Length: 372
Image (tube, rainbow, N blue to C red; front, side, top):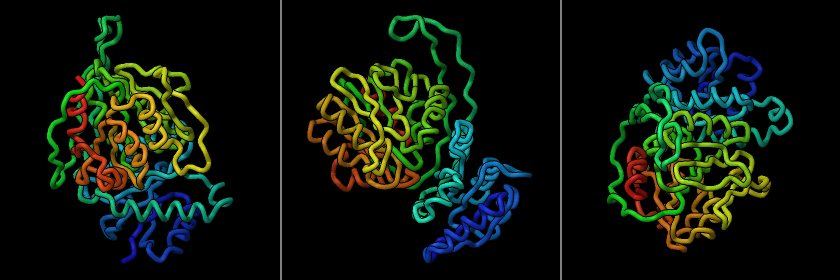
């Protein structure tokens, strides 16, 4: 049965072009269009599409507000279109917090210059997120985070601001969850986390559970364009008690700091405990790539790495996890019930590389148990 799609955009050209691209795929059926957020809600209730494509800037009601209403009234996987700017990144991250599953850059030049590539990418996204867990999830956006407390003596004896405990992110309700036992404590030299679709919200949920004195350095690999990772790192830094920044070449790993791989590039770890940022290799599908970061961590730290693979399409991270496993490091995977897309964690589990499988809401507390 074809995947039913509702296309929402205030641009008549963009609605027509997206509809044409999707309708050319026999596995996809465009069942309706809407020109603003209010129409999108009405059409979603009436047509019950499998997937909604959504612009964020529209008259009457913007896309983010529409996503929130749709998630409350008829949860449906939403694919956002966004501009490749810092502001576009910020708005897209708000949309993901509101419940959207994934996003694509809204680039008219690409549609004109590479129509086949755009068609393939868009149709693959639609078909993949149609199978996501969003429809069976009860989603709530995170509550506002309180203002930082006055500075005082930090956890390591230096004078530094102490970040407040973040407001909890309400959990989604799911069916069965993972049942791996609580982890054993180990002196890990690095925690490495890889993720893709659904990752921005998943990383937020995990990292906000970590205390400011978390004793292990952290590296994060999220499939994301170059224009987005700086805004995402800034967002995480405001929400978390640990520090988070977009990684730069030469950054030193240190406890309580999470370094996010920059979009469009590759992040490796050298023997000095510093990160190396390299140009994105066109031969690789992912820039940044989880396999590359995990592989370099295996070479540098041997059995002292705790790697976590969260929600995402595909199998990026599996081969890097294999190298880590061969060196004696530990691998965790997010369970199917709490994933938006059970692709990357499933690849870890099917390859029999997972030492533990945990629900998303348990991963943060288990990281604390394992490392402190």
